[in-house]
Length: 345
Image (cartoon, rainbow, N blue to C red):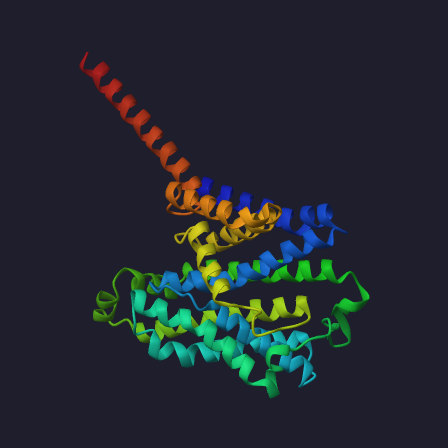
């Protein structure tokens, strides 16, 4: 047990060094690559919310709707209410969570394909709403020229400088990294807490959980609210990076991708969405040079991964550990058998 904990901490430490030190040094000054990494981290935050809904046994294909809501909420608060980005971004997440509660309370009663189809329609509904409410959202023109985040000051002490006075690409990268680390640290703590075990009971057998006094309706809404909050944060951050938001900023296709990120990384692992997002998003960017053959190659790779690794990329490590455990058990049995034979002899 101690060895496993030590190895996990070692892997975590290496990952933090890579994200916070090595990658910025390698790609410093390379704006395209910094932008790709920053976007991948922002999408990983929203994908974490989709993973949480899978964790309670629901297939969520509507995360793009809440990311779009969060993006517009952040843009409106900054542009129309002249609010600081550092206040607008968390408020955008809270607003998305409130909408998630209002929508989730009735639809979370549904299961399986019925819930999936309802959530699939949410992204298109959000897009059409953004296009129709032109007085608030700017309609098809969207909201553009969103200013960069200003300085974050507490009691006269500057914690974060004005992004317009520094390398904004590097600043957004580090902000995305901090948000990503905070998100998945909170997710890991959540699923390993008492409420996390209750969430897992919903995935396994809701009727049984309800029969022993678990308030399954409340737990479903809480999980969906957290999922919507993470989508709102991810959407608000993405809009701040792009300095604009349009009705098509997040579409149905993006909601499907959020789901695929979780499948590819592994639904049984908290950090699955990170792995899935980076592999899927970076491979998509890397295949752009194939022009019209890009979708074909991309689809073949995805099908191959799903066939050979149905439990996600992170299951590779589990397979090796299981093999090592079986080898150790076989060696132990052989030693016991040898000892018994010698004793009889």
